[in-house]
Image 1 (cartoon, rainbow, N blue to C red):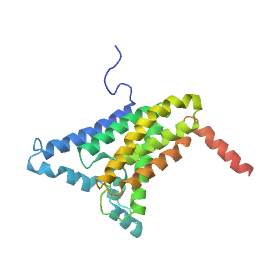
Image 2 (spheres, rainbow, N blue to C red):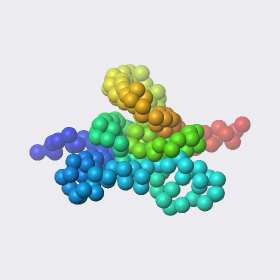
Image 3 (cartoon, rainbow, N blue to C red):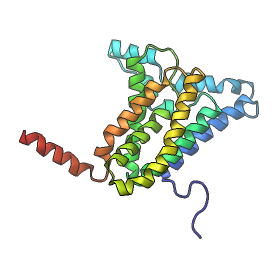
Image 4 (cartoon, helix red, strand yellow):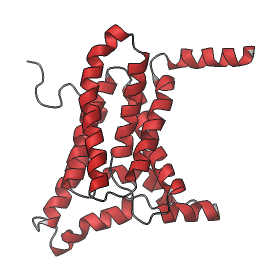
Amino acid sequence: MPPSGPFQRLPALVVALTLAILAIEAALQLGAHGLIGGPQAAGWRLAAMTRFGFSAPLFDYMVETREPTADGLLRFVSYPAVHSGAMHAIFGAVLLAALGKAVSERFSQAAMAGILLAGAVAGALAYGFLLDSRVLLVGVYPAVYALIGAFSWWLFTMPESEARGRIAAFRLIGMLAGLQLLFRLLIGGGDEWVAHLAGFAAGFALAPLLAPDGGARLRRWRDRARQR
């Protein structure tokens, strides 16, 4: 009998990341409601955000002093694991699963890992360089928007006859992502959109290199550059 369940068609990488996000949020929720961890568990979320969230002031300090710290560098990849609340985490996990399924049909899991990592790092860099904010950056969304960028590139390069069905599905995903961004702006989500857009740009830029024919495409670009 074939495997059943909501994760049966998802790549292992996406399943692992989605479950990790939901597990972390579940632990924080249980702690906040006094079901695990004792009285101190009420502060787990704040402690996690402080410990793992991306800090623009810390980034500025590392740039100014040219002394990167292990803690500061870890935050480039740790902040997507922590969210500001249940809806923030659940919406991110849903988008990650939906986009992971779509992107996995065109890219390998290694390529997807590279896109997700690039989106997270690009989002943090944009947040640190372009903003003067003391609000910690948390959430998987810059990495999710990198998947949107990669999938957008895929649609742009597909023959029109093949792209029509994909576009219909992508419109729903795009609408959900747009609603999330609008929701965060309306409720005072801060300047996270800068990191989201940077993640999208990173995914779109890396997609042609990480696609299955990326090596051949890179060689063609190199040959054209040499002929000029």
